[in-house]
Structure formats: C-alpha cells, structure tokens
Length: 477
Length: 112
Image 1 (cartoon, rainbow over the protein chains, first blue to last red):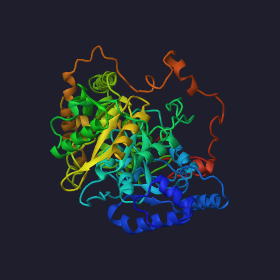
Image 2: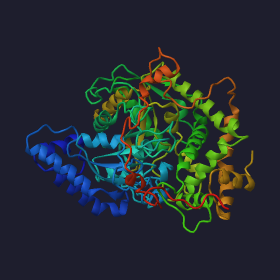
Image 3: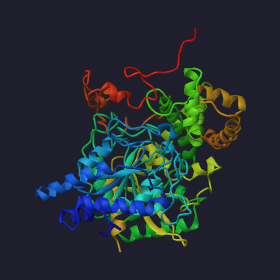
C-alpha cells in the first residue's frame, strides 16, 4: 500500500473499504520508519506491541461490520513530552532516560479512543526547550526537505514524521511556537489551540501558563478532526475550559467572503527574510481574492514579546523542573556524599546545557531583589501584549503573520548563540502569552525549495474561524 | 545590571545545580547576553498595568460570575480517590532509582 500523502480520511477509508487492514497499514508505516528514519531521526521509541494490538482491535470491528470510529486505524506519532502508560517517555532528556509512565496523557487517550494507532514517541528538544530540535539529549532531527537543515523545534520529530510520511498525523506541544515553527520549517500544518481548549493532563510541564497541546498534520481538515477529538473539559486539568467543543470539521466550508483579515506591520518589519515576506504578501493577496477584506492593524508592543516571554517561561520552568531530584523517578547520580549532593549532581548530570540555562535564568528572575524588575515586569508586559490583540480583534476576525522570520536554518548554525536561537521565536511567542489560537499553514517555498509558513491568529476559542480561513486558503485554486 | 560569577554561583545554589567551572563562565556570558536584550523592557512604563499570571481567569469563563465562583466547575468533592484510584505501591515505586519495596530510599539526611 502506498502511504505517501495519506490523510485521516484516506487512511480510515482504506481500512473501511478493505483496501488494506489497520494491521497492514501500521506495518507499512513501521517499514517506512525502518527505511527512512535512520537519516531523519524523528522517532525515539517505537510502541509496536501497543500499535498492533490497537490495529487488530480496529480490524475486528471492521470484520464484525461495526461502525468505525473517526480515526480508525490512523497511524499517529506522539511527541515525547506526552506521557504514555508503559511506553518509555523521556521528554528528550537524559534525566528521564528510563522513565516508564504509569498512566496516559488525556490527549493520547482520546486519540486512541477514537481509533488512532500510536506508532511511537517522537524526538524533541529537551523538555520542549528549543527552536531547532538540537537540544534533544538523544539525537538531532534532520529536516526531511533538506537533511542539512533543522526541522524546527521543539516538536521537530512531530513535524518531520508527518512531512516524511512516517505518521499520518502527530501531536506536539507549543509553549512559544513549538508546534507552529517546526510545521513551518517542514511544510506541514500546525495548530496551537486556545489555552484551556485541550487538557494538559499528562504533558510534562515546561511553563504551565504557556503550554499547549495540538496537532501537526498534512491538511487543515485533519487538524480540525484531531482538535475535535482531543478538545474539551477534562476533570484532571483544572485549567481546561468548561466550554462545548464545536464541530470544527463541519464548519470548515463556511465561506470567508466579507470577513476581515488583519495584517500587522510589526510582523513584517526588520529582520524578515525577503523571500518569506513575498510569500506572505502573495498569501494575503490570495485571501483578498477569496473576498476577504484586508485591514491594517497594529500590535505595538510586539518587540517586547521575546524578553517578556523568556522571563515568564523560564521562571515557570525553574519551578516545574524542581521536581527532578533523583528520588521518585529519573536519573540519580552515583557516589554521592549527602542528600543535597545527590540533588545537585543528579540534576547537573541529567539536564542538558539549554535546560540548565533556562533554570538559571528563571531562578535569577524570581530571586530576591530581581523579582520586581524581571518577573513582575514581564507579567505586566504580558498584559500589554494581550491588550494589543484584544484591541486588534475589535476590528478583524483573524490576523495573519509569518510564522518565522526565515525558512529552516542549517544544523549547527545557532547552537552557540542562545539569544539568536530565541529570536527565531519572535512571531510565535505572543500567542502563547495571550493564550489565543494560531495555526501555521504552508504558503510556498524559497528558491532553495524550503517551505514557508504563514500563521493565522484568532480570538480566544475561535479555532473554528482560523481553521476556516486556513481551509479556504488551502483549497483555493 | 551585570551578572557576575558570584551571582551565578548563588543562583545555581538556589536552583540545586552544581555547575562546573566551564559551565559557570559560559553561564555568565549567556545570562548577560540574554538579560541585555531583556533590559529593553525598561523602556515601557508599566506602573499602572496589572500583572498577568495566566489567561484562564479572563477567557472561556462565565463573566457574570466573580472570583472563585468562575471556577466552581473545576472543584471536586474532597474525597479519597475522587477522580482516580491511587497507584498501587509497586506501580508508584517502579521508576524509583532506589527503593526498599515500601519506601523511596535516599542518602542519609541527618548527619550525627
């Protein structure tokens, strides 16, 4: 069976129409992983036993003539920050190198309950901290479109697995752009929902007020299908919203004619690559041709987003990562002199350079004497950045922007300059601070054939609207 | 504000990290580079702007309600094994670097 370009619908119907079985489909994906993943590096752990048992269950349903669930037999990959019962979950870190979780993340459980077949766990930057996947403690991921380049991060394995047909869809997490930026670099669709739309239960925490789970897919429709499956209140996450989940798929074909699309000059300024700019301008023109009204908006505090983000995110991370102490799970250093010595050495040997850097920055920003100047200041600026969006959304239904200032950069290009790496997130972090939904869709490529992505932002809980714009763009001639 | 080697040692201590000499000097360089960029925040007058710790008290909630009333749905009965059964002891200990089958074991805490 040819598995190139399979979507949820085509995978499911190939099982339903008995062109293949769910077991055979999973086998085809494992064969593809065995042949192609050695040079890409997307997977960290394969969960073949669990996948085959799930696939066999789907095949039995089909044989009995029972109704197949919406993701029946669809092979999926899961970012290694989402915990999976009985399947090693490392968060890309040595400190969790042998960690086998005792329960399942809600988003994964919901995908499987809808019939999805989990192939394995996908590579990522350590604790989702990074923009290139080079901070994985295990191995880098190579961009399937150009193996000398990064796939983006931190959900680099998720984006690469979908782009290279090693999964039909993948789940990632996005704390400052970690779904949208790799989607852009690998030429796939990546959706960060509204904060509270998808339960974070079972997501290994990086920065709790900024962390989101969402899909990476080949089509906008698949992103809508996955969101419909994983969204909704979960009593295990008190921040998951008590709001009904719309049928995102049914609303995709609603017209966008006459709707207002905002363009913010702050996202098209200095530092934006010329090829990316012209692709975004062409995409905006295409939306205009679909009957959208293009409106200038201003998000005046945008230049302060990166500093505010890196203070808030690292402060929360320094607190969240305090739990890794070598006592209940994870790596423990040997030959220690005392309890305190054990904590220090276990953490120092278990965490990688970038994670230590962020713990240090966050601890510094929260420490006595600096709390007001750094952490509290950043929280106040977070309010200003959120108000910028509130103001802009009084005038428009959606805002479009480039996902990244450039296309995928080379492996090794930014590893020695953390600030340059952080600035790669300049167009994505604000949506996390404000909690609004954003989707990155492919809108062309550079002369070197590297994908370019465009983001569409919406109001809180207006995923249906941004999916509609994205779908209209994707399906327009 | 300039971060010194002494600051880095102090902060590493707070964070329970034991940095090597090389790591410490690199950390001084990196933190100063990042904080140099962060200092652009001081251009903004924020004295009348309230801090924002999270988004979920502002969006997706019933705005006719106030304070904790908005989150009444998120509370549950305070009962043993309310949402989920507790793990069996062997499950809870399965990932421990060291245990005696009943407790997690750690190096001696109190020196005599």
